[in-house]
Length: 299
Image 1 (cartoon, rainbow, N blue to C red):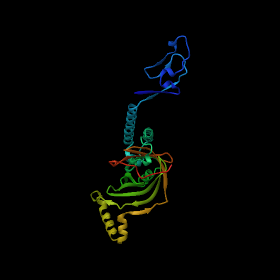
Image 2 (cartoon, rainbow, N blue to C red):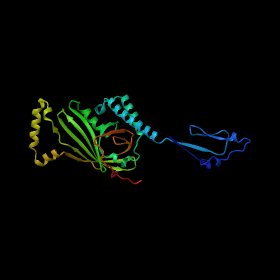
Image 3 (cartoon, rainbow, N blue to C red):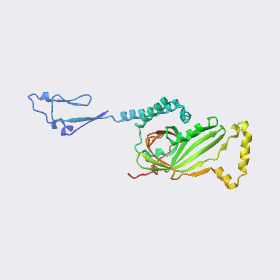
Image 4 (cartoon, rainbow, N blue to C red):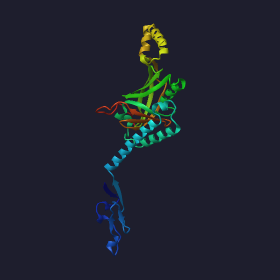
């Protein structure tokens, strides 16, 4: 630990520059530097000093250990709350929600990235781990779970890919445990500050379903075969459109503002205008030599 002494008087350089009241005994006006690097006076003088203790590497190491511990604690809280399935199915309890939110807040205060909107860490593929009421992800999940039993339809995964100021949100769904489909939302991201982003929805795509024939229930194989034959009878342009996915233009229909409250190489936390947090974990590895992203803003 290195200690440095600074003051508003010239006494920071030498003792002799301090003005000490006269006294018959010079020893009674002496000064001391204690073992704790604090300057004290046995008798009042005119030299005022302030000690600044520079903790250096040990404090930085301790803070980093605190951050890593907070990350691990948050991930364990997700698991205890039932994970992604427990969240989207509404099985997460109020106690589990407040516990997760408490750990989110604890990690946010240790954010190591001061300008996350232009950080190279932002780009890549992220998996949604947590989102609260009012989040677009939770609303989409609830539509499925409230209208279909889990044995019929299930939202298995929700992720987003961010690159060059654009984002693609993919919701993977499974029907009857044998038909897989995806809904893809394309959005444009605009940087409005070191923490704030604007997201504008551009297009929605309903991807043509994929049938896992080995999982199709026996009682449905006949109906599924008839549906496949009917699809083959459609006119070629319509058949190709269905095969390539049904596209829905969304430009100008929806946008939102959010801020990035935490970002490192593994975890991304954002909050919308209502303060509701969304937590994502990285799915892919970072580039070998990441540079600044193309997102820019003017202050």
